[in-house]
Length: 112
Length: 116
Image (tube, each protein chain N blue to C red):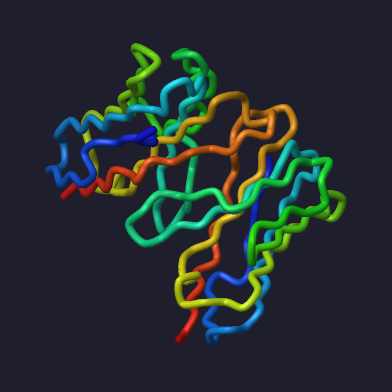
């Protein structure tokens, strides 16, 4: 059974710092991995999707990498801003299934 | 497109009452998912549909929960009778094609349910 873990559970950093969020999964046979952002009281917004054949994806100040063999992904946020404050979740689609399994999220606070 | 639309946004109900949550997926999306989010358990998939047909309902907690998709533009999640432990945020999401095709998934803003 696929399990997805995110570390740390919460993170508080000063504005301008570069930071890394971690995601690990127990079954490396995945179709894809996706990072999401969730603001308080809102739904989830997709940030980056990495297919199993890819190593990384970039969008603006965000970079996500995937190491399928070790069951790990990282989300790198460059030059963090207060507007980046949110909960970040990763999710995987395991091969043979057609559904996302979510991690428990990292709650990020960027201080001005 | 208006995105995935859920109603009601907030509901407070008494234990034992029937609760019906509604979802309108993005037009043209063939897959619809119902998730539940709690502090203790995070985001859990309850059920998903493909072309209005339930494919996997293994996440539905018990017989008190039921979901239907009578047509491509409407789905309901019903809880009868409701219990305080059902208090959670219920999300509906949709995708145009299977998730193994590299499609992203679009979430609604959720229905916040409190059972007292």
